[in-house]
Length: 375
Ligand code: SF4
Image (tube, rainbow, N blue to C red; front, side, top):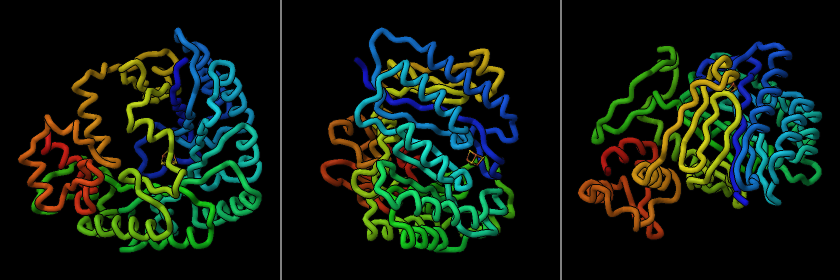
């Protein structure tokens, strides 16, 4: 018996957000979606392994998985259940946009065994939402009122919401204000992810580094908060969330006790995960694999990239995942650059915490730079 996590990619969205770089497509016919679901089920069915497999998590990511109708979900669940055993405490997550949240979907997903929903909110600013081509503010508020009705009776479903720092037209303190508004009105949110438009943040002058590939319109840059304020924004949110009982357990992820995302924690702990669907990434038997983001390739099983993860790569990832989360255990530090580590510790960019080497509030957004320096 082998215990694994499982990622399933659903590459459909109702429309394409302007900042999106995920494998997602909008405006496809139901016939094409049905064909995709059929092929996905075939792919799951064709998977074979010498031992029986128990799934600890199933993560439907996208795209917007909630664009699938209940029949399509039932088909995928039926296939998964035929093929694998579901562990008693399995976490089953569906990503959704606010406009796909309705009681029919929520009740249907609950019946299928879904116990975690993550909704991309990103902002409550109407001008921002219009500019990035996301759901309207009215849709978001309607979504929360629907959730309020749904959560009136105790549920085995938990809720995560996502925000982004650095979007156009969001003023200083804007993201915190939005989170505060929702948390004070709705007490059923148990997990919050806060991401950044990566291209927008920069490092302080004393740690000079360059970030390239800025692909967003210049008008966004002109109408968003100054890069130098990113850390402050992030820290204000972190401190506010701490007051509200949300602990940071990874750079971008905050949760109430017991509501951390099991699936994502698996990635950071080198847990093996199967991956099905176009553009999906997995890790199995020390091989990282990813499937092509083209339908043609996916349907003809072409361009699946595979990379063997040897001891050295695993070590590098261990250091990176350690810094992203609670820190690196001392036993893994011996091959790193101690001169640099000491420099960062003396200048408040690294710290020893609970016997682990960890980032500090000052460096939490500059992980890539720190990593480059300490290897
Ligand atoms: S909903 Fe998500 S996956 Fe779909 S277009 Fe927007 S950002 Fe991309």
